[in-house]
Image (cartoon, rainbow, N blue to C red; front, side):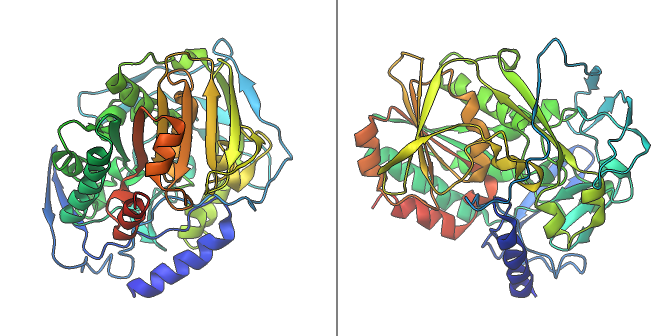
Amino acid sequence: MKAKAAALLLAAAALSGCMGNEIGQNDAPVISTVTGSSVTSAETTAPVTSSTTASTSVSVSESVTETETSVETSAPETEITPEETTTKETTTTAKATTTTTATTTTKAVNTSKRPVEEVQYDPNVSYMPSYGEWIGNIVVADKNEGYKVRGLPMCYGYLSTGAQYAQMINSYKQTFPDINFYNMSIPLASAFYIPPNMKNEFPDQHKLITNIGDNLDGSIANIDVYAALAPHLSEYLYSRTDHHWQPLGAYYAAQAFIKETGLPFADLSTYSKFVKENYCGSNYLYSNNLAAFKQYPDTFTYYKPKNSYSLNRYNGYFNFETKSDLFFDSIQGSGCYCTILGCDDRIFEIKTDVNNGRVLVVIKDSYGNALIPFFVGSFEKIYVVDMRYTYIKMTDLFKKVGATDVLFGQSLSSGYANDRINMMKNMMK
């Protein structure tokens, strides 16, 4: 059944352009049991056997962004300045998983994807689910609760696989002892938005992150993105209709990373804010085309830095192709996540007006794309490489560009998938 589910998911995602089409390859997940505020996990030796997950024990990894993405251009993006943005105050309790929020009454836009109705909904708030169920290859939370509907891809893996991932990064450090190395394993939305009726089915992703850190060389910083995001769960950190995070979540993760580097970090208030409507992403496919995701789409909010920079695009062998852009404003609809960088299968070089000699190489999957705009105010140069599409060896690239810092910035799924670990090992050979 797992092979069949994986095949169906791959076939569906292949049609989605820059939406997800990767399956985690781990056979035995870490199962967590949540009781009150305590979380325990165990490394299992067999796949999930629960009757509710037997046919869906497939972890959805990050997306592949392809250049043939379908682009809808019917509605241009809207820039919102800090003065024009009105949000309600939100109060977060000491426990990150409990929030109280104020809502506003918003009249929905009359489009084919959003019916005309009055809804109690604040687009700046991320609501905690009240219940969930397996539909297709993901858990769908609150499918009958209008704009609360949320898709939750799972992330499974052996703790020993995470240790192998850490050892792979350690080998990079051993080869380049003078470069600063950092790991950022980005949790999926299912790390946080746990429906009460499914609390025993969700893996402890924070445990998976700390497990990697426990196996890293002491000179390598493990950025705890879970801890960085947890205080902000009342905010819109993850998309509901897509398995990626929102750029706002990437902002808080980038902030935690830059703090480790000791470099200056531009506050979000210094960025220009843009909003796109009617974003229905990969969770629509993963849920066997659940209509609620199209009925109640996401917004996609992204932020442009105001300092000066330029971007060059190279192929996977690091041969120059053309000048390019960091943002592709014309992309609409299902491809909104592709707004940043536009694709995954190229190497990008970003030159900024920062003059500090620091050169960052980001080794990433698609989750890493959303981070890049928040680095241009901190590094003089940034090189973005996707481990799935990069053919130049890192031993050559680091020397060519004069790398001073290297960040492994990718979804937690990539740290617990043997094929991804092997890809990154091969990049060094």
